[in-house]
Length: 259
Length: 189
Image 1: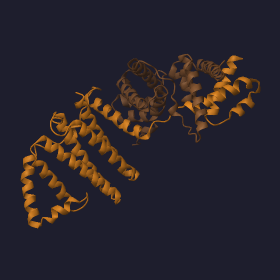
Image 2 (image 1 turned 45 degrees about the horizontal axis):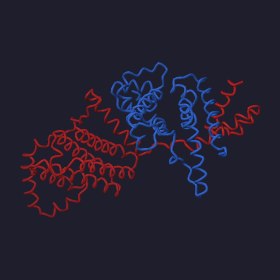
Image 3 (image 1 turned 180 degrees about the vertical axis):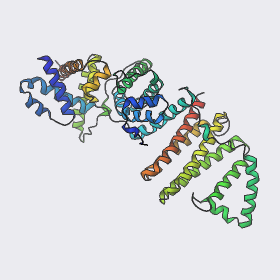
Image 4 (image 1 turned 135 degrees about the horizontal axis):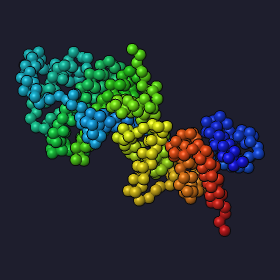
């Protein structure tokens, strides 16, 4: 009898939880067990309604997945689950090209003077896909090449990263999703450069401390998530990638910070 | 060549791929089980933030020990559950105390009147106290079968018992809880 009762309680609970039956349906199906079945099922429902835990936050699921997969990726690459490495393949040795950029910069500057200073101003608001956009990016390269301190490099790189995010926001506002990839690639490239500096242990000694930098990363992720919400499905993969990159850079900084 | 949709692969295939370093395969497993693992941990810690942190660690630890995981009839969700339980033991050891099965701030009911709130608080308290008084194995089966609504088969896998044992445990646990709640509802002499 007890075994039958165990089975009936269990099966009825499953059917009630699945919404296939009510407590009353179960009681009617087993009238001889009514005295035990009814209060037990009613109590189970009450416990569930009152104490069942909520589902995880959607934002948490997404961010946590990115963090976990970044760690997994790093451990797969380095064969050590504790060791987080930046994605070297995407890193750019921007210092090596500093002098060639300076020379190229002077040529561009001369051209800009030749064709009117207005072009440089106009290029400041240029978006990816605009004819003046390469001028804007070249101008940034020159600024970077003319900065000779790590703090200066870091500050400029964060300015550029923010500039790429503003471009992504603007492109989203005007519906130019096809150009979004250029802005996001620029953002990721900048993040890779910052990771490189961080790996060399040169962040944290000057005016820009790691805490401030981490706050910036969090802001970046917020902006990217806002952009993500406003773009069609097909454009989201590039944004996810950029979030992943920012998250990865933040993780690298965190590891460096924690020693 | 026919491209395989990774989302449609079963756990065993995903684990196989994840072991070979395919990150996306592990991502699929994460998506499959994040909700149940988070909700299980949430039944055992008071703060959502703590539950989030612990859930993340469960998945990281699971990946680290993936090479040691051999299916042999054990579902991946049961493997994650074991990792979660071990982690919770460490967590309580550090925190020095285990929190009650649930805290009142999690209820999804939002009463509009003060009387309703008081009645609800009373109910929550009564259930909470009743659950706390139960032996751990009774509380655990209530967490799995009643709060998380896992199937009998899955609950059996998670706790490593037979389905028959789960049915018996559930019945006994609910009977014991009922006794506790009734005791609590009795007017004080």
